[in-house]
Amino acid sequence: MPAQPVIDVAAARQVTGKSHVAVGNALTQLEAAGILKRLNESKWGRVWECGELLALVDGFERSASTT
Image (cartoon, rainbow, N blue to C red):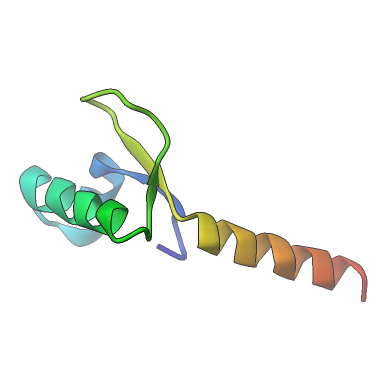
């Protein structure tokens, strides 16, 4: 997730080498656990983001720009 805080099934498959079904199930489980948030409601082409990771990066950028 750190390298790609916004992800879809195709990108996750490329990174993990796992099947479409396995990756889809994993992303759905991460969504159910509150780790990922789905950005769209389409059945195909779903995209998720890791909001906490994006907030962490944003906070780091803000602190780095003030020093």
